[in-house]
Length: 502
Image (cartoon, rainbow, N blue to C red):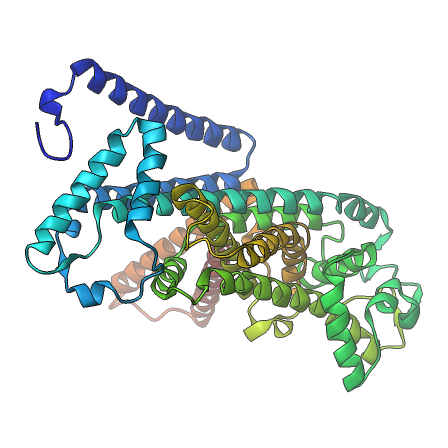
């Protein structure tokens, strides 16, 4: 027998076999489920979602590595001793440690018949005795390490779950715009000049301008921001908004294809962005570390931090709505009447720091911080109980939950669809503008063209060396060679441009 519990030397073999079998079965079942889900996505040609699934696997691998480190170095960390004065600084709670230990022992005895609870408490007493003998306190107890281990797992699962729900509900909202796309494609197009070139459109009478343009001047600008703030909560995108901005995108980026399926392009772009949103970047882990550092007793950090995703969400939604208003204002200020349909001009200048992609990063932060807040609440409730000092008072708990639900709902049904729609009004487009099979074909063609151009250049160089000492070529031959070089350079530039897009 060993201190803190029974070792494998004195554990029945059938117990070891049963426990290992259960763990292996659950692990293989989860792995097979992800594998078959990936095959299903490939079969349905959902490559962006398949890449997102691969990203989730990467996060699970990172989570497993963190778990391995915490398990392997648990005893070593627990035996790192610090001074007692330093150990008493920055505590999240000032409650009696015996009460916390009693709750922990009661919770685990319910599930494991006192086994794990007694073992962890015994290990804590061993490490505490080790540091006490030195007149110091342990850096982090075995129990605290175990709790931290569980919290990291809960956080990762909550983030992936909330992101998936957000994308699912947001996609459902965007699918409702499909009828607007069909209506726009059924309209009569003139390939030379766009939609309805022969008719005259009075700008002020257009539905898009009537709904979005609020006049000129400082008061109108303030009204536009207030209107944009309120608009994100009801009817954030109307049919006139969709048809007008869709036409602006087509006339800017694919003028030769007036019946371009803008709705499908939007959905492909959103699926591609899901891969980036579902991951946990280094700066998000830094946020978790900073929060754990500042969670002092009496600061109520867990309460104030709930306002970060709330404020960011309102700011992003207001900005996206205001971009639509700006596009309307630009047209209304320049024209009284236009020939054909009203066309807006997409530009990066409407976005913060001229970067539409910045909006995606902000949404990523919003989703992670909201997931963190909800995961932290659930972890505290299960681990320490509702009356724990880390949970806080009811007057702080209720607002946190309300804000969390509000952020999740608005981000799913308003902000994310707005992002998918409005960020297409930048100066450039994404690779999702091409269908998957077209993208693969273009990439293959571009690489083959680049390889052939390099081969032709090598042959021309070899021929040049072989002609040393011969008579000078005629002007016509030299001119043809120069043209060939120029064409090669043009193809190289086109190849580079296509590869950069794809």
